[in-house]
Length: 251
Image 1 (cartoon, rainbow, N blue to C red):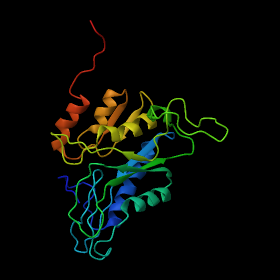
Image 2: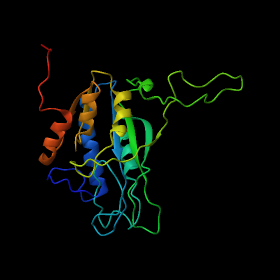
Image 3: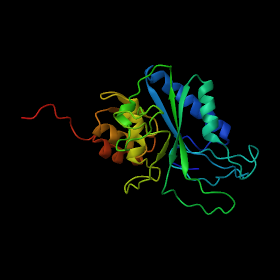
Image 4: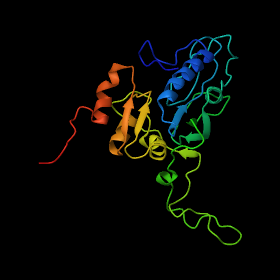
């Protein structure tokens, strides 16, 4: 659906199938670079078939969407791109640990009258092996009162707080100097804090405005991001403070 202004961008393939093949190939490469105990989180929105070879009606923040060919599906049909992507990742050897629903309470309105407005996207959590790094304590929710108890009266609450669950209510946030697909900081906070230790390294293959880099800078993680569009370079450097020298010592 979106044109990010670069001939090598992902998302303007002729069919959903070609788009998915491109994505699986990319994550095959990422899998080679990811530590065995590492985590991979992918935010992906869905789209509808237009039946005209042109863009379809969608509401999404995140990874770009495929254009739909006339032959591939009926008009108005939801294409289930995230689910097809996830199953393909499993077939490529990934282990799928969670389907996380990002519920956007302040979602964008849609002009459609024959279906409901989309107000969520999916975040997939993949790993390479059964044992991997994961620090749930870093993202537990505190202040929930007494919580649930067993019939014998024993509390099921963890002393550090509640497991946040797999539905995250996170509002979208504007960023004045950035393009239109900007992640809210809270959306990247939970995956990074739980999936990468302090001093660890985060790879963001769709750098965009640099939200991941900004969060890593403020939370003691190293970060490498890829972004094809040179228009975003200055913003990424500003948010990641890449233009500023590291202070070795105070004198």
